Amino acid sequence: LERDGEQLEYKSGEEITADGTYTLTVENRDGYKKEYTFVIDTVAPEVTLGGARNHGAVTGEVKVSFTDENATAELFRNGISLGTYESGTVVSESGAYKIVVTDLANNKTEVEFTIDKFVDYTVNVNEKGIAGSVTVTANEDVTARLIKDGETVEYTVGESITEAGEYALTLTDGVGNTAEISFTVIKPLVKAFSYNFDEMPNFERVMIDGEEKRLNYGTLELFKDGVYEVGVVVGGETYTFTVTVDGQARAELGSSAIYNYLCGMRE
Image 1 (spheres, rainbow, N blue to C red):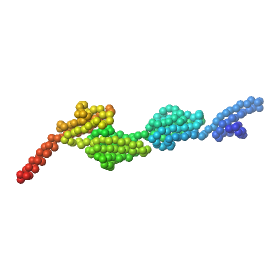
Image 2 (image 1 turned 60 degrees about the horizontal axis):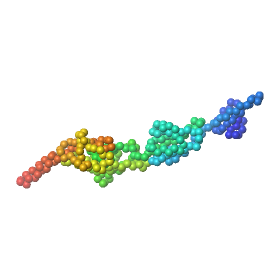
Image 3 (image 1 turned 180 degrees about the vertical axis):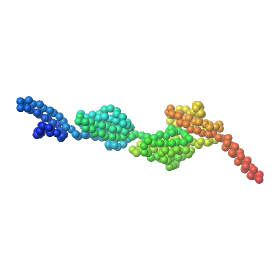
Image 4 (image 1 turned 120 degrees about the vertical axis):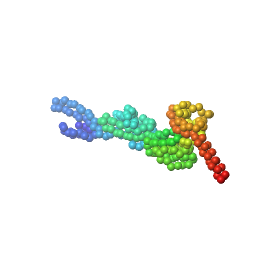
């Protein structure tokens, strides 16, 4: 018996367990000789992870390298196999990854990493949009900074923003990705409503009670008293809110106040 070129003593029936390349030569008394060659390999493939640490999260590209020419690798993203992975191939798309490298002896090495290039959140208003209330939710741990009318205010992700004003919200996740969105929360009850959509990205049209409303040079104007269901169509998505125009009630209140004032003077 030879292991890696070194001759060893071997007795029939002995178990061979040490790693190495073996040649076993068997010869009988008649001169008949036969050789058996085999490899014992219990060492998992050596893998180098570039651009990330094992089980780490990064915002950039990652590649995995292995030197065993006979090894094969399989790539998984978000738990789904994407097929064979070639050593040194760059992975750049966001997702949770696992790469399993297997050698001829079926030894395996697994590496896992996450590529995170954006803040995973949802909000019920579009960029520079308008709403009656706004709620932000996140599918990862984030910190939030909310500015209302130029001043920083306290905000916890998941809470509804209902106070009328101009807002700017910045979300930051654990790997440093940021998302910024600005929006306007309107007063639900107004004497008249006017809003210009010229600076709203991907704006398409405005619907009032389900019917398209013609704008005045990009401005929606609602002066007649009533309750309006407003739908703003942006990039194929419709964002809705309700606004009540009640100029008449305020006018009556004003007349009553004047009447009471005059009565007071007369007394």
